[in-house]
Length: 429
Image (tube, rainbow, N blue to C red; front, top):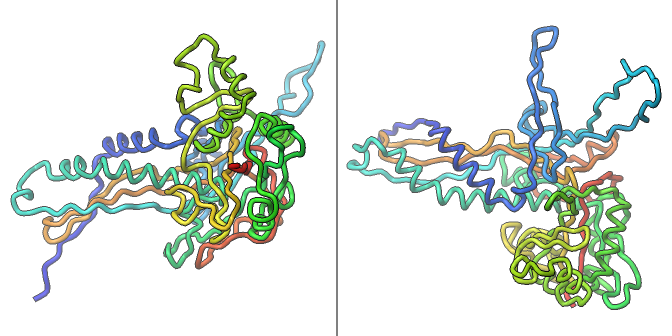
């Protein structure tokens, strides 16, 4: 005889979902630099209602929950442009001369991320009125840890691959998903600056202002020829010049002053700390502050125009054995550089570096079987992340190629405008 089955879906407590959502976000590496786009619903003359922008935050990560495109597989991230019209002077007539606020839009693919937690219930437990609360209590800590790890990895993927992993995964592994092509960063450079003399310069991978291809990266000094040079004060000065050239604005704030947020890992930081000039200038800046001196072990450092944040996972390396920045362990694990020269990237972020379409934030649901004796809890969110960059309408279809059965990479370079981030490879010796 067939086993009787009773099943259904129940949405759990939204208040507790909100608490878990907050705990997840607080554990994200980029949490201090997330800003929200302010929007409002406007009633049109025909009675329909549309959502319009009130203000874009200009933060390093621009998050928006509206502006979902047709078919709900894309969202639009607005970037507010600077005012350009010259000011009026003297006894000019001001009424009617206002300059309209202008925005550019970056399409971001969105897709589901879900995790199921199984909770087996016996007859005695079934009699308790707080059974659902027990599921929450026992599952929530594991879900927070799990979602933090994977959502952080989605952010990292967007830096290097142009999109979060949940949309670059091929349709064979993500049924009815997105299958978007990876697009490697257009502002990618290799350190060729001599650490002792300051001679030579940064070396662009491929063509500046265009996304990089696998062939271009494998033909660069990351893999072949002379290895990248180690980081130094001379290197940082060249990076500052390049960031000015790329018009990347400082957006990380400390004590009222803005800096370029620069993310490096501990091996790279240790090389900088061995640089005599770096140590002297850093110590002088913190003279008399004893324990506040970052030489004594803080995770955020201020030097010149840079705010250095230390992280083990955000700075990646190119793994030539698999042609990927994810490494053999994926973006949730430390980077690998098999078949490449020993190196790591330093990532520099300005305003609007990443767009986060947080369409359906974290929520939980339960599924019951066997007359309620078996319960599973589903943690679900729908989101997508992308780099803040723009291409001409004529090549949108190529740049935002989707529907691929396996994870693929855009292998023809296209002109891209990215004034919000850049990545720099440095050697380890």
